[in-house]
Amino acid sequence: MPGSEMPNLGPSAEPCSVELCSLSAVLANVTACGPEEVCQADNTCAIPPVVCTVTGSTVIGFHGAVHSVQDRCAYSLMEPEGSASFNLTAAFRERRRTDVPLLDHLILSLPGVTMYLEQGGRVRVGGEALVLNSTAQLMHGVELSKDQTGVTAKFPSSNMTLFFDGNSAHVAGLPEAVEGLCGSPSNSSWTTSLTAEKSSVSLPGCEIQSQDSVDSTINCNRSTDHCNLMRQPPFSACHEHTDPEPYISACTHTLCSYPSVDGVDCHFLEAYAKACSLKTKVTLEDWRSTSGCCKILYFHSYWNSCSQQPCSDHEFCGEELGSTRCFCRALFATKYNATKSLGDPTVCRQDSASVVLAGCLLDDKGIDFSTLHLKDPSCKGHMDPQSHLVTFSFNSSAPCGTEVMRNNSQIFYENSIMSLNSSSGGVITRSDQFQIDFSCKYTQPEVRSVSFRIQDSSVVQQLVSGEWNYTLTMSSFSDAGLLQLVGPNTEILLNQTVWLQLEAVGLDGNMVAMVTDSCWATNQASPDSNLQYDLIITGCPNPADDTVQMQGNGQGTSSVFSFNMFEFSGASSEIYLHCKLELCPTQGQACTPSCGGAGRRRRRSAIYTEGNAALITMGWRN
Image (cartoon, rainbow, N blue to C red; front, side, top):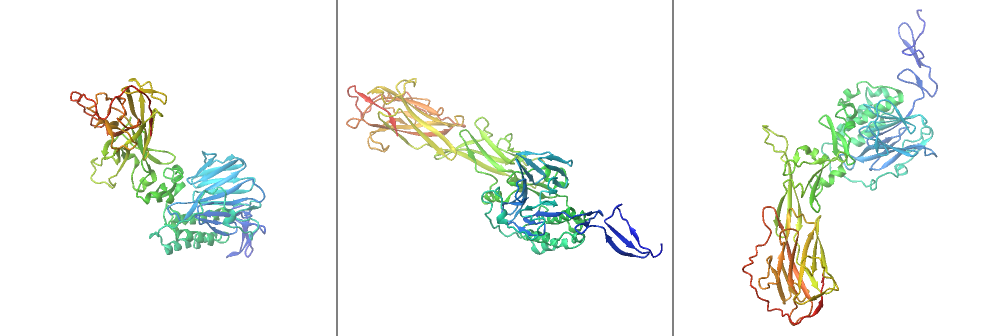
């Protein structure tokens, strides 16, 4: 009727607000909600949930209290007062800068089980990754689900919902008495500190802070203007129930110290929009387009999202050229950047060598690991699916083009990691030529001395050079078959034949041979003693002593020579035998010394005399 006031019921049969209208205008807006309720965006009355948000390095509590995390530790967000029914912890780690921590993952501890909510929408329980979808799965009293925007965990018993999109986390609901950095839902005056809430699951050394060099791409004024967009429409629709100031503070705090990459500048706006939606069911329209955040990030692109590309512990998922990939964390990359390397030093073992490169460091250089190979193009690298480390290796069975070279007292095994031949017919290339040389080495053995006395039957020397190591053994025998080892109680007569075996264990016989270059005896421990007698000269038996015989010298990693026992005339009964050994690369050359048998002079040395038969006890010692 003319002049009468008629209620506008709106979209709901039981609206929480009505408009009293005249024929010409709206006279009043009347709410039917209770004193603790608010009229939500869907026109229903409800007690507004409290919302705690973690975004960037900032925790925004239920009542707007702000805690700025400065290190890479883990902090308790909430747990029931006087109860251990659950604990929610936020862990912070560095990404592109060592001095700016960002939220990395959440840890949900329940009786008997721990859940990890990680970047890329991954949820792990007991080391196993769960397969989640939009249909909620009840696990240990928690309803878990995942869609294109993030992971949701509902706690029916606690009237609480947790949402995590890999960058920001929100806890919303009406939980009972809890404590932690999120604060107390029912007591806005309750306070705590980062020190009090530091979690025992924090990694050792997480509190150590560092200072990176200045990044010229960071523009604090421009970042502040961007963060202040939360004061303007369409975000102003949330201001009545969700204060934007803590979110603006978190935004400027991070972006004035961190580059605007990986979509991090939009994470704070998205966090505010999500908190608003959780609190009042208000969905902000077109906020992405009005704020320059139109890029499809993380969960929004199925094939190129972080959810489809799990990163290792030393990596994080970031944006590059409209897609996503795993980047090296700053602390991991620092040790390699300092030496301008792409991986760890060569690992040398008994008969193999390997080099491990970091996949994320290769990606930073725009290098596709699948295009790399050793000198033999068929020998490619293998990327570990978990760590994303790429290993290149060779061994005696698969040398992969390894070259063996000699440099003074060292034997080098050399190979190279290189890219595929660029002569594929293309006119241009945007990839640098790539080659990494690596090598392992044996050190030539020095002069080794043993004492010929009645003590030990064998002398063992352990030689170590870098990671290469091999054992050099000198043993004495009383028979040509090398079955009767000369021991402490063995009696050797003068002019009796003694066989000595020199053996190197741990050398790769396919690539290197051991050569006995010379052996000589002295009556004193020093190899340079004045009184000397030569048994082997330049790899051959002394032509002046026809009792000296050699077998297998330079043909492998062991050799045998024999001589008839003697003593020095007019000197002590002790004899010290010194042998000089060399390593010889077998690749492309013969290592066996050339000894002319016909030219040997068959005469005895004047240095010793045979004398009468006598019993002596002989052995070897260092």
